[in-house]
Image (cartoon, rainbow over the protein chains, first blue to last red):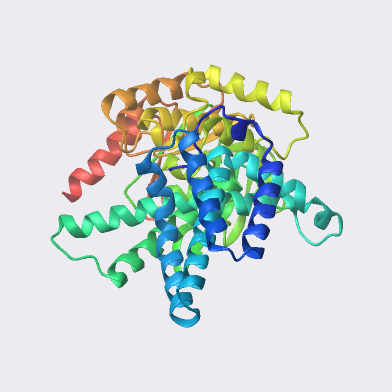
Length: 201
Length: 228
């Protein structure tokens, strides 16, 4: 399985995961409260600079950002069409900055640390008897684990099309992607049960 | 190990996968062989409670796999066919630690347990590596470490040498031979099974033979030879 985490010993790597997630939440709020395209472009550049400082290659930055590109471009285009170019640019830089800052957090935080923070954050709800905090942490951790895995599967299925001289089409890509992902999810769920990670009680 | 199948039957969607079965598995090293779809994986998965019998009961070291599932699971570890799906978190060290989360251990105790198990399999240098960077043999050892860190008494392995090259296959075989835990190995690798104490041949959901490896493997070869 691939991971979004990148090894390192930078200041960001050493910061507690809870602090990084809290900072990301604050940054997200600020980005949505400010409508100045210039400021938002600067924020996006700062996010990009963060990747450069972490010595993340351009290829890797592109790999990490690729899933967001379509969403960012489509939202920006719709906003531009309905609300004008300025608003479109604002939406583009806001979402790009958000994706870049989020990528900085995932690059410097291990999945285990994410699970730890989410589990601790959900503990008050467990005390109220609403849920099991460990299950919430594990669920979020599995989502983070699956994002790059699904991308890898997509690439394998797409390459299988090319190898057979077929042009990849949405249906012929998505159907096997869903089936293989669900089969894999079943096995992982069984492994979680078999290893006693999620108690039945 | 002390595993009992009492009048166990498994049915899926109207089809009987395991016919009514009474079986005791004891001893140290037991192999399960049979054709694809014969029911051997279903049989093994019942030991860990991953498959529940449609009727009858399975007990592992005295614990019913349905009524006392957590305790029964604590007795046995399960290694899946594809170790990629067994490793849940990307970093090996983190993944092994995940299995210890339900125990009330301090961070230092978890680190010590993870170090000890990595050391036991000679893969301490892989602790900070990601699962997708490991070779097939390393991945199989990593899966072993992730399961054995919780100290189960029995280890069930489903096709542990599947898709491995000869070097990695031999590494895994050597590791299995030296494991102090009781082992149940499901495999098409007859050379691997030949080194075990007892072998069960599963055929069309029934135990077709049960005995020493030479005798049962010979019968299996004869059955398939007769059909060819």
